[in-house]
Image (tube, one colour):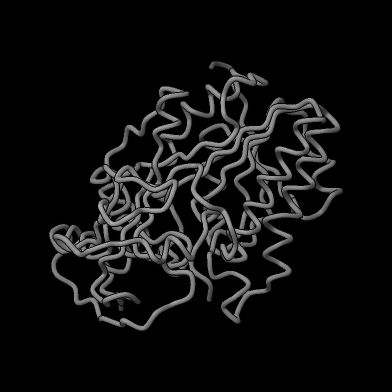
Length: 334
């Protein structure tokens, strides 16, 4: 696709957000200061053909950690999406949402049979897995039955509303459930960007802890570079209202990109030198031992697959961390 104009809208309230202005402007992105929670700000948006909704408070602890407001979480993650959907309906433009693996049910995921192998939990595939889980990961038909966390519930509700608005509203809707997005410039926060946080802390010799489970860092997540989303977004825009394709797909690095915190630490030890990580086996709300998304449907329907291997993602984050020694302070709350 050629001659695309990308426009970004942000309220710049997150620590570090202002740092994005110069780089995005250099790349040709037009930036508008606006708050999607405010309907009048949304109504003032410039004309567009498509809206890509990736605005959210992405912390699974938000609204439940005693430090953040559940009402603000819902305003950011649900009310903002409703305003965008109302706008799409009024001006008849397409809507793409970047959703999350956290729409999947916590209780059955917490009970998945796993064993520690080579520093990481591995799924025990012969132990009676629940529907929607295989050695490839968690598929789109896995349960979304609450509890999900307030964050997960806000994103699932947004998905449902997007499909409801799109059907009678006459505008196309595509929903992409993403694994853990990771790359250079990601904010260094444990609850929102674990790979960037871990690598930056390791480099700076900041305190790190393995939380929960066996306290050994065996919990596993997949990772995906954001640029690998672009070919899929192009295809979805081209497809428009094609009713032969599923509206909801997992988009992730899958099993090939999955790694544990211990394995990430081992990579950091080689890259930066050894750094001690404390052990704290006490459980924490919403933590899960093994979350790997099965992106087979995206591969089959869209001929999509990630192109950036985990080692390249980690190296990109490491180089950025070395070039920005104050990144943790700039991008984390005071």
